[in-house]
Image (cartoon, rainbow, N blue to C red):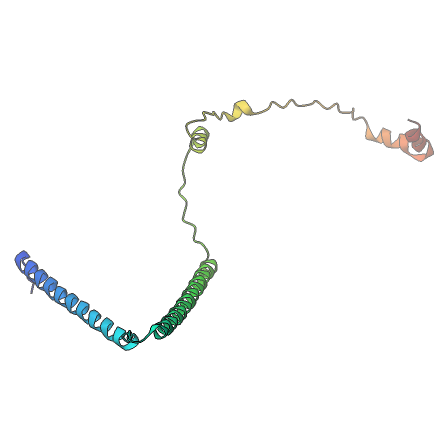
Length: 171
């Protein structure tokens, strides 16, 4: 059996119903939040007693200042703990990256002439031509004068004995 597709009017009707339900839920959630906030304030913040003299009001203000200081210390401690855990998380992430290693993407082979490479590196401001053959130095070969190779047996005979060794030092 083939499934029937939903018509656009049916889809629009269902969408409007879902939006109406979501709106009601959001309104109910907002009302619950207001009642929770009022209950929390009633529980933790009793109504101030303003009857009495100046010393009683000063004492109440001192207590309020101490409470504010304590709350600020707790907030600072919580912020410090959050910063510390964030730093630890960042360090652990770095360790994970080091352990896994950085994956290098496969590079594409690009055919580019030397002039095109220089243009890409230097930009359009510098116009340098790279004719490698023109920049090569000319190297002249030195012609080595080779000694005439004669009969090696004759040379050995001359150096044999004391006479041959004397000739080496006399030369």
